[in-house]
Length: 272
Ligand code: PGA
Image 1 (tube, rainbow, N blue to C red):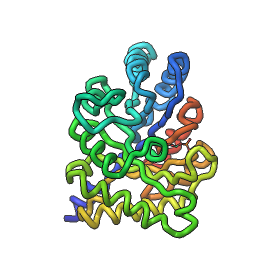
Image 2 (image 1 turned 90 degrees about the horizontal axis):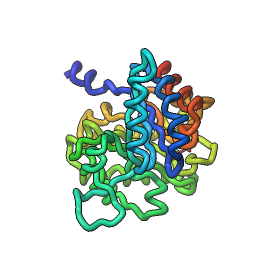
Image 3 (image 1 turned 120 degrees about the horizontal axis):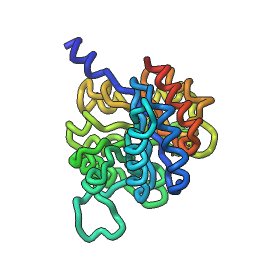
Image 4 (image 1 turned 60 degrees about the horizontal axis):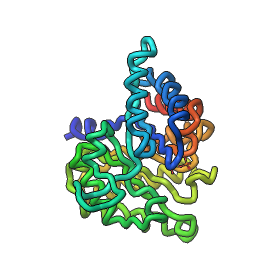
């Protein structure tokens, strides 16, 4: 029993860059080789970048090229998308399926980001279906949850996050939790320069593990949970030093090569 718990609680640290609707071919040509060179030696963590759909292939090609062109460097960089739809194919103009992402060489997908919830009306039920479909297509879903400033100020943080994760737990199957990553992103910390304190984040991460454990005993200990919201190299170590924070989902700072690489290095150092 003890040993199976130990295996379950081994969580590989992870840093994910969410480029949002930013980037261009020129920027990718500049950014990707620098990220590859800077992170190639960090073998104890996983590093992923999530460019806009139209640049997935450009980034993939850049990674393939770097693997052969930079001497002694083998890329330690995964590719993710920022969204997908829950149906396999059909009349869903403008949408991209999880199977298409897999087919295009993508291995990760961010789902339920607060910007998609707020600006595009995504509900927990839809996000849960997307998580299931991403899992079924062999992708790793990165599920985002988080509270507004009002909710935090009125003491509703845990109730809200509990309700978000509860819907996902009801709809997705048990196996999905073997692979799914959760990102706790307080909405008031996204793009604002204000972060939760590492203690506030740790408290939510522990709570999320408890919510998962209530439905699937012990499973909460093995799910990777990232913190996101204004993570920069100057504040990242405080988060990585916490036992229940397994890495970061990084927005703005992931568009600056040196900053992103430094965040990855700090994660690698903290989680040895
Ligand atoms: P930020 O964004 O790091 O720019 O705050 C994080 C996110 O939205 O994933």
